[in-house]
Length: 270
Image (tube, rainbow, N blue to C red; front, side, top):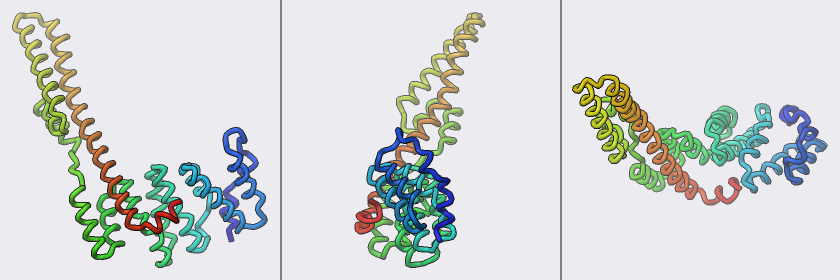
């Protein structure tokens, strides 16, 4: 029975702001609300979700999927709900939702045949969450020997070298400018080093000539600004560079992985 998940709708068709949604969405909500039985409500809900996906409204589609109580349904229905929830989470860039629905899928869908239908989504979820180890393992697990060797080769060649933000900070603390160089920003590193050296010279010169106030306020202020700024920028450079590398790698591997499943790409994902 689908009564349990229908109760979670809370008569939503009665409280929709008609000025904020399309007529097609209103019609879908009306069909769901006035459906004569649970099966029709479920079918109309998925009809609405399909329409939202077609229009690229993956967050809205995901929100509608979250309204479904799938715990007491059969495996086939659970597979349909949870696989679509994973897919919409991926395209809506909802990392936490994607990993949550992946966990729910593994907990609820026990049928091995059904598991194979949505298993191709698992690496995409892991890639989105930058869980590189599980993404790699799940790809190999679902591949034959030939495809597996290709995936292994592409993975090894393209997997980025990530820098450690803490290492960049420590390097900058020991030798100003080295943290930026470690992050690949040699120009910024040299500027930071010259700034530290110049402000240090300015401070020392004023102290030698007994201009303590000016030396402390101006020279000390510049020195601390360059030094502390170097610690912060070196870390930020590494984090931004790591993010860019991860994004490019995720896009490349996700695209390659989807090309391994042309039939599913043209059916389930639309």
